[in-house]
Image (cartoon, rainbow, N blue to C red; front, side, top):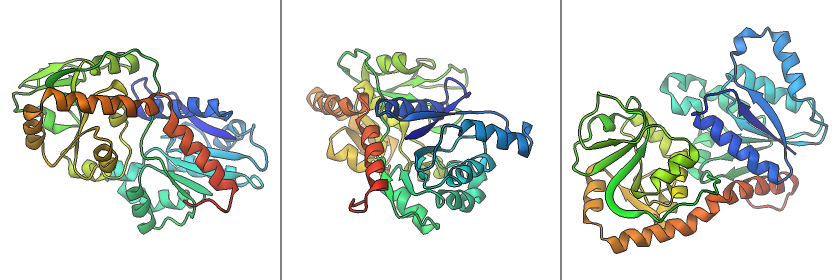
Length: 334
């Protein structure tokens, strides 16, 4: 069995971090890695690109199972050619692992959606972030019968974390340039912002700077809540279908979360009492300010139990193993 893995992007790239994490967990299940480098594909002629892909796929044999983490971020032509080359092998089964859907992330790319779904339809099985994403893709023309739902990203770590302190503050990972609500933070409740400091912001904002992996969850674990939020309509719609890596980061850090109603993980958060589901930031602030230490620590304990799964890669292992079973068996319900 094989799985693709992205290289060559910035160390801050969540897309690359997520793919690298998935491939490391897959390696524990004896998957072989197919490394894909991020580069300007336009520098290759068609013949050069063909030769490059032949080299990348040189370890594939007839009858293999290949998990393709999509997208590669090398463009539609690259991804389409990659899938077509895989399908040229006899009896190769392709499981397409949807990490992100660029036409749903960026409104300017919406026109590419039919082409993306056509590529998805070349696979034998597709892994999607949520049931809502599966339903949406089916409405838009997805015909793949075998569908596995991911639900949530893992966040493997062995970092030792203290139990969070009950403090009425909110943590947020994200750039003010992308999330406008940060620029308009009007609340007395402090916002701990994990992004580069800028003079453009005012209000009760504590800059924590950009942090990487272990440092990030160590700082997050100190206190408060983790916020998953956007007020841009196109992004909000996407958040209803995608799996937020931010959510997994907060939970791995051991802090309860605050998320908008209709986020794809709404039921998971509610059923496991992992935080607050709200309709507005005003409602979130009101609930934080009224919360007792007992209620906060009850949620922290729930997060601690749940995060064991994330920190040990169990969701990814389950998705990969369920996919292999579903590819090879006809008696699996999915």
